[in-house]
Length: 122
Image (cartoon, rainbow, N blue to C red; front, side, top):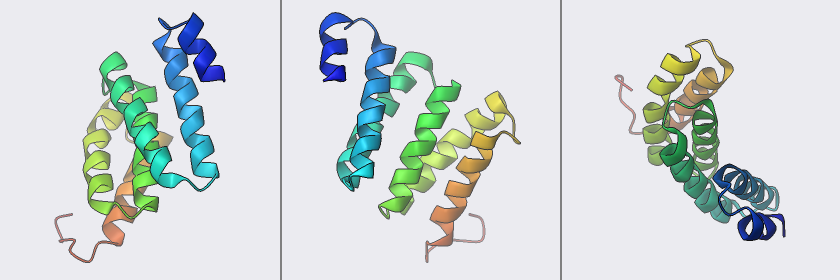
């Protein structure tokens, strides 16, 4: 209902729409509807990236959430790819010791750790 109201009365407020969609994605995940949640998280991530760029902290946070969901669903290759894409902007923008950068590294390690085809270079 909240999302419908925002779209109706504040359709120009993309930030609130994305926030509401992110909340819906979290609720879907809490209900065990992980596939639907991931679809919505990917959409929010793509729109946030287009709106704010890859180096914005919230874009990086949403990207982290997408990689986390991918790992949980066993989509290791996609999780590795997205985590690698996010690591450089995270390190440059937030710093290598920032919590979000470290969490992205942890997600990448989790995806690699469960991959029987990983190489030493990974």
